[in-house]
Amino acid sequence: MMLIKGGRILNPANYRFEAADIVVEADRIVDLVAPGSVSAEGRQVVDASDRLVIPGLVNGHNHAQTNLSKGIADRWTLEILLANAPWTGGRRSVEEKYLSAAIGACEMLRKGCTASFDMFAEFPLPTIDGVNAVAQAYADVGIRAALAPMMADRSFYEAIPGLADALPGPLREQALSIKHAPHAQNVAVCRELFTNWKFDRTQIRPALGPTIPHHCSDEFLMGCRDLGLELDVGFQMHVAESKMQAIVAQQRYGKTLVAHLDDLGLLTPGFCAAHGVWLDDDDRARLADHGCSISHNPGSNMKLGSGLADTRAMLSRGVNLALGTDGAGSSDNLNMFEAMRLASFVSRVHGRDTELWLSTQEVLRAATEGGAQALGFAGQIGRLQKGYKADIVLLDLGAPHYVPLNDPVNQIVHCEDGTGVHTVIVNGRVLLEAGRITSFDFDALRVKAAAAIERLTEVNRESRALCQQMEPYVSQFCSGLAKTPYHVAGFCQH
Image 1 (tube, one colour):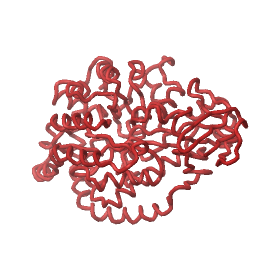
Image 2: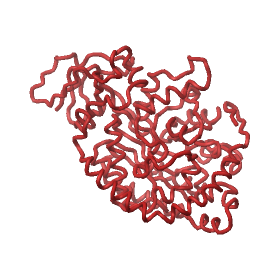
Image 3: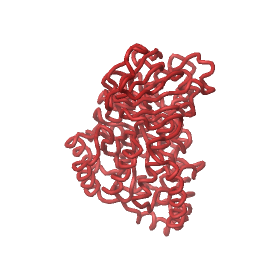
Image 4: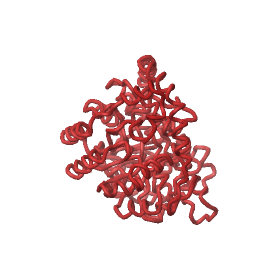
């Protein structure tokens, strides 16, 4: 049993901080009581004096495989990033897949994030050993995850009409030799994985991750749909992330990606669209009417030049809004405090009507309750409330960004950078104390990471050289395609 005493607790009803003690039994909050009203006898006491107490943050979109490739890219669009995927994430051993996931889980824990929607990728299809290794890394570090194996049955060069033809002959042959496994094999692996899931689903739950609609045949998408309904698992997909994706959707389907997914029956309350930058009014209406979520990833969207998502339009239409970092390959860090700050700022560039800007309360809600709903943990995490899981973060009011303390919610969203995280509790266990991870040996990861990078640099040398030969052609073709004017209701941008 645990007693968190002396803190200022975020009240989810009004987003004000109020003095209270939190009583925890096993993995749940069993009561919030007046300060000093419950005896500490027989309980583990966590001193929250001079602390703000908030629910653990929830990362709505992430990729475990990218944590070994952070910081390698500059001035890459999404399409250049995808073209370089064979070497940035290729030839990983099972141990390196575990290592990459553990590094990311530790970074999130250190920065107050206690759950993540992770689209973990392997090529040419998910493997039972690989997915289990990633799930085990999350379980060992101690934070939660919805883990969606990221899949496709069309390669990057097959998915974009005309791209392969833009390559010189020898490069075209090599590009077209890159093949994902057939859709039936992908679905079969997921069926076996999910049917024999070896992890506690209240901590690590499975989900489906067909990566981008036009990277997947309709047969594949419908197979995922049917499996998801049969086994009651959620979905996450990259939807309308870049303008090029929006243009390709019109070329391939004659409609938007969201409209196509709706026609195939994939939109359900368990569906989460990652990014959603290039959505129109009808797209947002479809997602809202089906109870879907969108994970807004402002850092990645800006770094890759994908655009600025209209989060006010999403909320106004009734879409559940989550907030994410994306993977370390495109955002370079997994800092949800930075994601909150950027989400607040991005909402302000769409116009000067301040009533339409996201409030800091809305941003904090997206990073907690909104993310919980997107991950399938609604009613379990994301709030400090009786009956919820004890996923709790203590922020140090002695940190410079809280001096003076004027408005706690504003300062969490606009000032906190992760350095004020003092204590993190997940499932009623203290995993980080005084800013140090107590549940896992992160220093050992540093040694293993250095050895892994040395090996991977060597084994991916030829793949990297090939990708670099293709990169100028990919960049020119995709940039040219993205110059196509795109005019739809609720979105007009060149």
